[in-house]
Amino acid sequence: MGKAKYRLTNLATSKSSDLDVLSGTIGPDVVDIGSLWHDHGVFTYDPGFMSTASTESRITYIDGDAGVLLYRGYPIEQLAAQSNFLEVSYLLLKGELPSAAKLDSFTRSITRHTMLNQSLLRLYGGFHHNAHPMAMVAAIIASLAAFYHDTTNITDDRHREIFSHRIIAKIPTIAAAAYKHALGQPFVYPRNDLDYCSNMLHMFFAVPCEPYVVDPLHAKALDLLFILHADHEQNASTSTVRLAGSTGCNPYAAISAGVSALWGPAHGGANEAVLDMLEKIGDVSHVPDFLARVKDKAAGARLMGFGHRVYKNFDPRAKLIREMCHKVLAKLGQTENPLFELALKLEEIALKDEYFISRKLYPNVDFYSGIIYRALGIPRPLFTVMFAIARSAGWVAQWQEMISDPTLKIARPRQLYTGPVLRDYVPVKKR
Image (cartoon, rainbow, N blue to C red; front, side):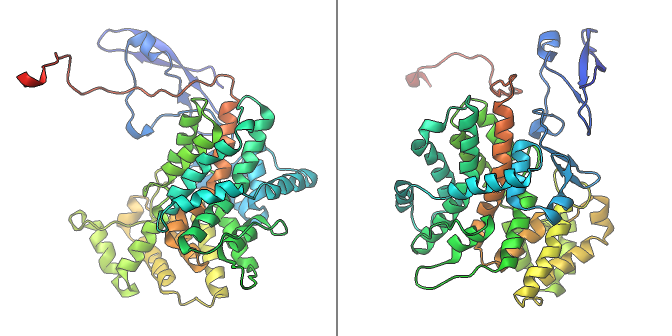
């Protein structure tokens, strides 16, 4: 943290004060406005937190202009090429890459926590068969507190560790059970002999009446997607986890709140919107006309999967997913996949069009992820659930960091009030 000062002068009163300028290890400085109300009697106004740092964190760093994403200082490209999701989860939680022995211990712990209590499985029977899987996942995660209430002391380091392992371990099982419930198929129990992503695919697609063998490329593709989605700084769902967690609520409730926030189409549902867009375009020959309508605001057409609130350059995750898309579709014999062809053509034309270049609209992580999920046989309503499984690692890491912070305070944003001023109550007979 730096010792620089930011001089603030109220032009109406001529009163001045010095605000501390805080410096991180990398990234822009921030101005500490904690004394603003006390010194000047005003709040800041920043809808959507466009220019507000809500917390201090050591977990993830994004440079949107340069297209950089770091987990604990490690570039996402290196982790995607050399690591796996559970090692990345350990890194996010602990801050350092594990030794072989520590990774083995962590992996065994996650593997042994994958089963769900039978009573918890019976809760699925209370949902209609066509309930959205995100509704089921949010509810079941919240219900975990009723089954593990003896290990939800958020001031206990060991309880926090158990909770973190349980969330990462159980959320694929919770998701698979939601899928099986929707199909009317029997639940498939986790297998301790399979790796994390192979186990999830097995729970999703195996049936008791015949053997199911997981394709290693499918598991690798899923592992890549999980790594790329594991954390992304203070996004809406992560901020929701922190906001809820700041109240001291049980940690399962905080994660459930994050799942609900992720459900929003502007956040976790964006990859579904990309497929909807591609299907509406219908054919490669229609791409120029579609892009012309995108540029015409009156036409109301939206280019989904391009641009990002943070990235003003090519999303580094999109490049990695694009490569994996080619591999998965080639393995499945779908190199002529019409949606993938559409996506490539859309990308090709948009990246050469000055309209999109000037607005820094580049493909983001959602542009290709839906195509991979679809190729793997995962139904569209479960795309956001896949996102939740991956982001569980980031959520628990962010929650752990927040809860262990000795300066933690309950989050309490302020507002600009524009409602009625003081008025007197009028009895109903006189209105």
